[in-house]
Image: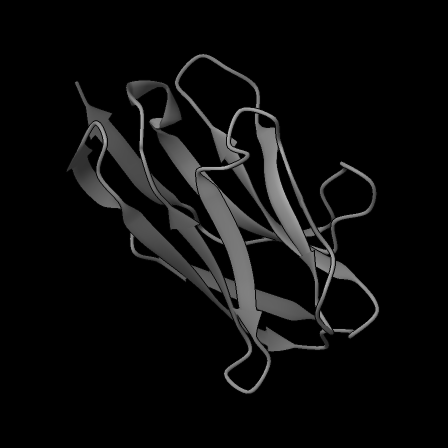
Length: 119
């Protein structure tokens, strides 16, 4: 079993920054990706970014590339998403997910954290 708990969402003006955190516990494999998905009102949940848990490879959706940075701290078992140059279209509930294979979400989800970007 894996437990994921997100934090760090909030309200920010366009152009601002936020950092999301996801505290992970349970059986996390070093040989899997952990990542972020988001769901905007009236839209399907979509892939945002993923990182190889033992370090190295990262992948991003085109819509966030160059603005968002995914990282992890293995010692703290915590996943991060640094979001810069935020746009109103980034408004969504952001979810931590494990394991992310290709662009597909795995079985484990956090509760979600709301990010609202005002124009």
